[in-house]
Image 1 (cartoon, rainbow, N blue to C red):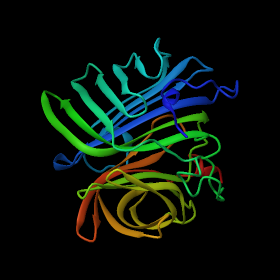
Image 2 (image 1 turned 180 degrees about the vertical axis):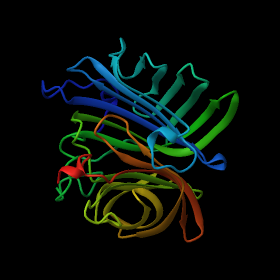
Image 3 (image 1 turned 90 degrees about the horizontal axis):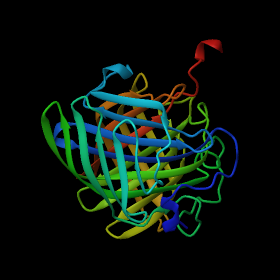
Image 4 (image 1 turned 135 degrees about the horizontal axis):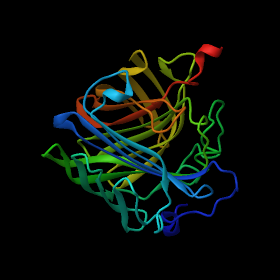
Length: 318
């Protein structure tokens, strides 16, 4: 179970250089088809932080064609703890209510800035707590994430409000999205064959999924690894899920997804990407990131898909 102390840096369980802690906050402006990702990855054993601010508004197969990308691999560790810190790239994150609410600010000095507040709509969802997650104790073949990079991990749905400014134009932000927090061993090549996604519907319902990706059949998600359905203030863990994807290369083109929660309730929904782009948050890691418009039998939703669909960056050696 996640407690208030989990908003602070965790004591590394290994002296290996790859031990890392992460915070990710995503949000979007649906009427503008703008998706924003705010990411920080401190590595306590190295004394450095990776941070990426990534903003997309269209479609491209190359990472340098996105709307805005500011990625730094070797920032110095902040003086504060993880509940209140500032990085040299202009990112400031303060937890205003333990493991629930955050104030996120960024100004990289290039005409792009943001000032948003994230307010949790549910308790953090601990993927290793069997009282929350019915799949917590079920290791699935092909899952190289849960016991390493996600040795400690929670996901959470929350409301994000505030503003985003790009080249003197300011956009209002008001959406329901996801954040996550992880700690564990995370090397440069480890994250692969994995999908992290969320769908947030207009009826106060969210679906958050961690799917496996089959590198030999990128048109399917063979299984759910972890996930939940949030209906208002009620949360139900997922026990099963599959998906079909149509792609343009690696980019997403269309989704047909199905999940079943612990009540036996089946949720089927489709998704149309409004943006889809590569995101290379660090070297040797390639994922596709999309803002999707979801449809569940006429109930509309919005959310983000991060798809680590490329098994290796050195395919030509095979």
